[in-house]
Length: 590
Image (cartoon, rainbow, N blue to C red):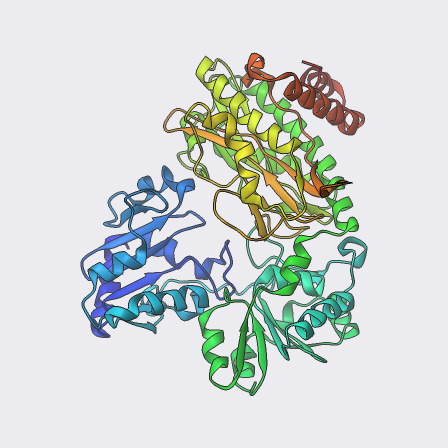
């Protein structure tokens, strides 16, 4: 079916139930960023494949809201669909709720699938639409329209993430979470986000592509813990670990029936949990809406986890050097496309010890495709790559010890002076953020300008965040911390791992991004208090052919020389032959 056909069927269903507006959020029952195939409703309806965005459909119009990462990609994917692009955050773009209010009559009805709608979104809709007496109801209309939806029947194993890699046992984590429950006077705690479920129980799986998680919920009380999961997926070692930690195992499909039996409790639950959970609970319980305590615990990596990061960064760095050598030496000499380059990188990563899979689908953007921030090259139709111009490669790996995420921008041949200038401005921002020292209590928004300042001085910017949290053999995008323009009250704390990835994008010309992962650590105590700094984790040289060295300050050159010297120390012994010779040229002092 075409998007037009799908919209027509949806509108027929809306008319049948007197629904004036239907919202298709990009979510599953666990509010995941990356979705199991059966929950990719927005992609199915609209054809837009980005990881962020939602569609609003009325009887006469349809519109997709998404952010600056997809302002180039979305128009191409929406072309001919009848769905209008709304550039979220751009002046003149209406908020989707205001758009709904202007489109709907007094006393109208808005429908969503409550299983794929957070309580935060549901509550905001109800409050915003109330003055016009517009109702919000739960109607999963796409359930019947998307008849070819395939439910994954595979039994991906759920396996143990041993304490030797996790750093803390399941019992210790449950004890810490229960302490937070006591402090908040909560008698029951519900955990629905998949990475929090996996982290709490020191388990991993593969139910979601690139994320080592499994479908599950946890209900925790002062004395009991219950995991709702497909029991056939649990490996014997996982069952044993759960039993030893006092965790009862129940069928995944019994979760909502179990909730309805909970009465007269104070229930701690994140407002980002799906609305169906709240509807099953709230009539007979007192709801405490607050972030999942384990979420912040997970974000602050312990020393065991940090050592895991350091280990896999070195291992991944060896792979990246081999890849960069292959790419720069063979572009223009043998046939290759953006897609085949991504496959080559995956093949090389598979040679690494304890490699499990990619941490996200590799972004390989050649020339103008580099300006598509989250570009995904398809096997059919991806651009041929030659020894001319630039290429952006953003990729990462999941290893048993940790997760990697790295971006390098390369010159494969002749590039313009303007490109080299922009590339250097972006690197200056990355270096400045790498060097920053900041007092305890600092938020990511307060550091974001360090990464943008060199670009801002020339009237340039990028429409994405500078840094996101990264999990430990866990989701590559992790909260609650970040570094971006948006306000986020979460302070940066020791042990937090974040990306440092400023960029610049010239539509249809080139894309530039430099990315390392960094960890927050204590720098020193002064009369002004405790100060922190970033420990750089990623080990891989930058391409000096893309740089205008005259634009770097002496301090920035010193940082780059020290970084490349460190890369040599970490990687040289694991390289040989032509790769080693090439690498030593890349890490020579400027």
